[in-house]
Amino acid sequence: MDTIEKLIAHFDLQEHPEGGYFKETYRSEGVIPEAVFPNTFEGSRNYSTGIYFLLTSDTFSAFHRIRQDEMWHFYQGSPLTIHMISPDGNYSKQVVGLDFENGELPQFTVPKEYWFAAEVNQPDSYSFAGCTVSPGFDFRDFELAKERSLSSKFPKHKDLISRLTRG
Image 1: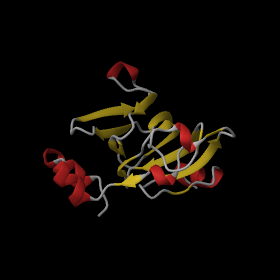
Image 2: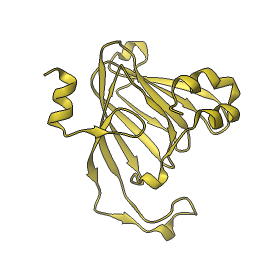
Image 3: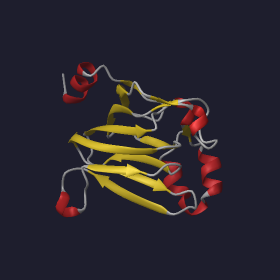
Image 4: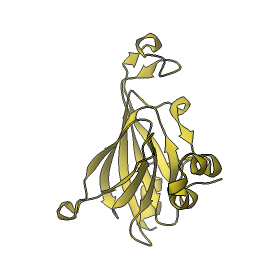
């Protein structure tokens, strides 16, 4: 069994709608009531959640956004690049990995409401990472981009959006 298959089996990872594989590893017992949020969330949220996330070089994490900051933690494999488009259309990227001297970071936070996608940097490889979200993740906060809609909103990033969306 290769490393990717071992990781999927050992951690009981499931396919993620954005691409790759995941498993929730943490959901705080504490809950923030909906009334505390200024019309940001529908329903209450746990204080924090965490997942394992495995991405392979033959796929990508498609452009999506959530209503919370999402912190990425690098564990092993190839570095990965997180592509981001801010709400006002500015593009930026960050390589998450362990080559500190070349600007890679082992931990990076994607700001809330940013559209973001990720891809493995090395061919025939994988990136094994973790993601922490606070307030805790709920699929009601998740929006998977549609290529046509996101490209019309940010036409100068059309090629990147076309490459990193599914439909």
